[in-house]
Amino acid sequence: GENVEQHPSTLSVQEGDSAVIKCTYSDSASNYFPWYKQELGKGPQLIIDIRSNVGEKKDQRIAVTLNKTAKHFSLHITETQPEDSAVYFCAASIQGGNNRLAFGKGNQVVVIP
Amino acid sequence: GAGVSQSPSNKVTEKGKDVELRCDPISGHTALYWYRQSLGQGLEFLIYFQGNSAPDKSGLPSDRFSAERTGGSVSTLTIQRTQQEDSAVYLCASSLALRSGEQFFGPGTRLTVL
Image 1 (cartoon, rainbow over the protein chains, first blue to last red):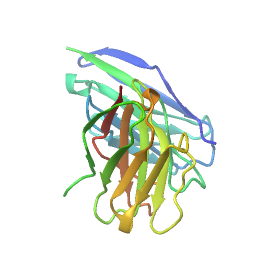
Image 2 (image 1 turned 90 degrees about the vertical axis):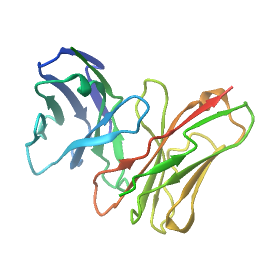
Image 3 (image 1 turned 180 degrees about the horizontal axis):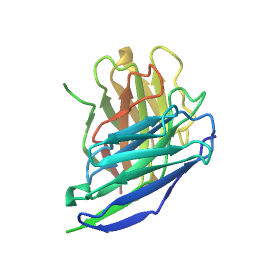
Image 4 (image 1 turned 60 degrees about the vertical axis):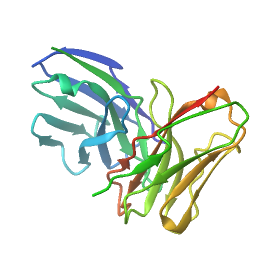
């Protein structure tokens, strides 16, 4: 089945700097890759997603890049702010998996003011 | 519009008791998922409902876990004879399931088994 891994597990950045989180996946048939942000005490919220027919997608300070050949995709946050501090989960679609997603274990991002 | 809601938000129970966790998905969403999130861990898939199809129960960790979805809307996750290792946050999500796409999560139920 699909295996999704995230690196690093914890990332600390100075406010205003950029943060990059990378995910790798194992199933070349996966075609949908979302990123979720989870704040303390809340459920995960989708912040950006990408499908396999594009290589990059941007939404203000957030971008996601996809490398299908290498089977990895990355979340880029520019001009980080304290409110970006959260746990970020990546996921990949499971083909033949009833619209299921396989999630990574999450990255704790800490933005230092 | 209203998002996914879950109740209770917190549940403390004694080992050996049964618990029921409720999920109200977004109206019109045909797909519903239950996940378990242990402290500092990722999302562990438990069960998936899609319309009137048989549910995908492949993630349920033991026969103490079961779930129902009545009328294609509200879902209840039941854990019988709870154990301390069942302590976790239980998350529910729903989606339109037209194709692989966004899952909308509820706030979760934090279950503590003493």
